[in-house]
Image (tube, rainbow, N blue to C red):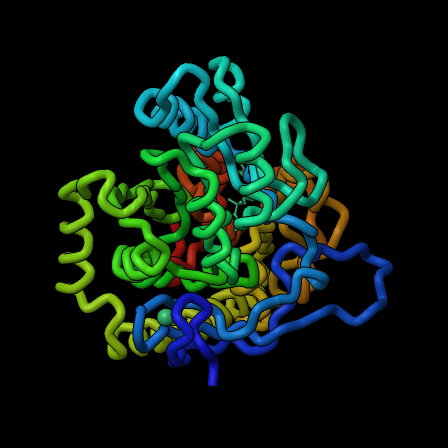
Length: 398
Ligand code: TYD
Ligand code: ZN
């Protein structure tokens, strides 16, 4: 039986995707070594309700030896992070020489914006890929103590699409306890279980998303570590996320949004067994429908491609057993993915210029979280008669 990584109680499994490769382990065409696989299965803690993977990928097996590095190539995401940084700068700083800390650093947009505002900033990132002021370590009590000794307390510790990946998340909260000023905040944004269930966006489930947070589970986790959940905010990015703000217990009254979200989760029975089992059943239906549709279109002689070699697509392709026979190539703007094969499924990744030369009949939009931006950019595809295939919240053609 699996134990909860937050509270050690029993975890009940509700969805098993089988043995999956690592979502960011793109392969060179000539590579022959067997791909690492692990069992991708999700369960819920019967005590604190934290939804989590049952198996953790060991650090040494990971594609990145650090926090996941996301370069979404999206203008919308760039703007989102600039806005986020400016907001935190205007609401959360105190004293003469405040300190803004980020765990991981993604595209560097947040800390770049903070630095441009003349505010002291620092990233915790062990992998060595990051530019700027970097403390080369994972964020925990020991590394937080080192930084606190050198830099003083932090006003903000911020993390985007990072904490959900850290199985030992208790260590992060301990680090925040060490590093934050008395009125400092830990702010993090990650995929929201409520949205994943709502949209049946099962492709949010992959190796780099260990936790699937709710207000209820984050509140329980915060309280175990001397923090309180003082704010929540819906974010319209990556298919629906929540930004959680944690403050030291008793230092800041929670906003009304916290009680509202807790009540909403309760009313829709978000973590009830029938909800989670129903989600798992719908995921199975999507698999059947998608494989059937792609098979039929291919048989009819239509040309198909994939769009966006996302981490999410790894779950879809490998869980559905879709390979190059159904989706011969995936277009993606990330230079480091181009010329390589998608993990497991082994579909060649080609640059976006290949999309129009000539346009395919159908494109499976694996980067559906950027649908608006991509469909606007690729308007000529639809005008030429092309159609998008989406599989969230169900399989449909637009
Ligand atoms: P991302 O949003 O980070 O999703 P995930 O976390 O599931 O990997 O990835 C988006 C991918 O889509 C990334 O590989 C870049 C690609 N992309 C394009 O090819 N064209 C575009 O216009 C955009 C916005 C993204
Ligand atoms: Zn638990």
